[in-house]
Length: 134
Image 1 (cartoon, rainbow, N blue to C red):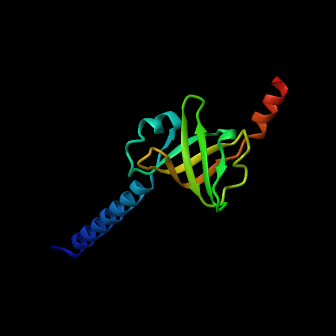
Image 2: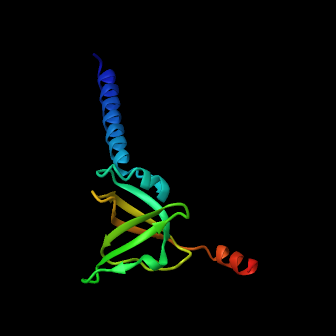
Image 3: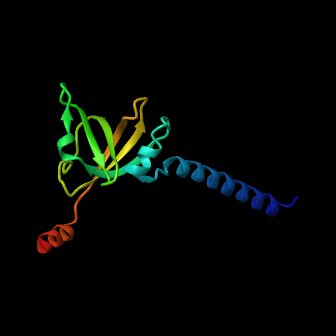
C-alpha cells in the first residue's frame, strides 16, 4: 500500500468518526415543539422530554409555600394542561400576549413537570394590530 493511499484512508476514517459524533450529539439536542393538545395526547409517555408551546391560563397560577414552587395551567385555546415548575420564573411570564415554551416531561398523575421555561416575547406589531382593530 502506498503512503498516499494510507493517508487517504486515514482522512476518510477521521471524517467518518467526526461525522458520527456530530450526528449523535445533534440527535440528542433535537427537541420538537408540541401544542398543548398534542402533548396531552402523549401524556402517558413519562420518560420523554418534550417542549410544549402554549399560553398561561391567568387565573390558574398558584405559588407554593416556599415561593419557588409554581403550579399553573397552559392552553392552546383547545386543550388545557396542568404544569408544575420549581425555580425562578422568567420576566414576561404573566404577560397575556406571551407564548410560553415549557420543556419537561409528564409524571404519573399526568402533570407536566417543567425543567425549563422559555418566554416568546410578544411582538409590538401584534399589539398594535390588536389596538387598531379595537
